[in-house]
Length: 74
Length: 256
Image (cartoon, rainbow over all chains, first blue to last red; front, top):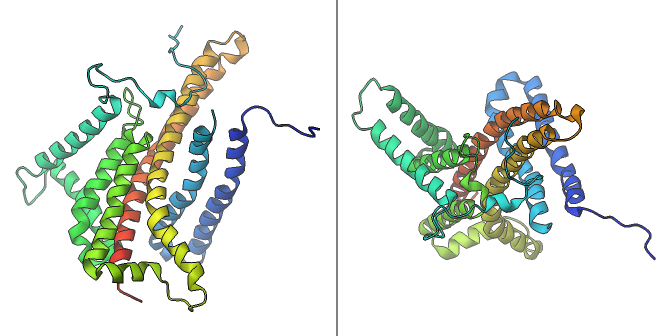
């Protein structure tokens, strides 16, 4: 007996679920950068490369979600 | 009335498989031509910029020297210290090649980056993978290098758990994520731009009159996203080179 059924594109739902984690991650990265700059403004230039590196590493997972949506879908 | 392009909406992955430019050579597609053009442009640019170097640099010489200075100071020396200078030419070339091929994705008329096909980032990542392993093995010898990279400083009873994790993360995940990150960024960027541009045409040709002005909004979003795509392009080229130099630095690093 079918209780619930999902029709249509499951890869779209999958991508939406996959984007939760990287969204939180990027928020944490920028929150920590803003906080650390507020505490010690001279460190802003030193920590800026780490912001970019962290953003690219975290966004990689969100973009894997997009790409695998096409790979695993139709 | 604007002409409607004969493409499907929403865009599928079929547009990443263009037909060959010339039937006799099935491998000669738009991607191959773009990679050749990128390599040719880089070679010609750097050759011409250093043809007659002067003490007070001309504009092209200044541009080429800035690009090499970035590759040497920020990337090689920043990650590896003074001994990293011997890797600086490779990192500069890698950065400018990835930047140029990524830029093909937003140049009007071309609008397709070779890096949106998984094959090209895979080759770049394989070169980086072979490079950091070869450099480590050449300096330390094979046994000592693998012991250094696989065995973290930890108590003996957790090593059976840590060594497979280290092996997986260093030798399997690194090249995969390096290539997949660049590919997915270029792929997703192209898809987003294609969706908003084609949606503008679809809205313009819809039968409901109140949907036609929304096409302008869709095209304005496409323009805004092109600027975001420019940021992503530069960032992804920078990240690829920084991570490669970080892996090489980690392979060359002394024991703690």
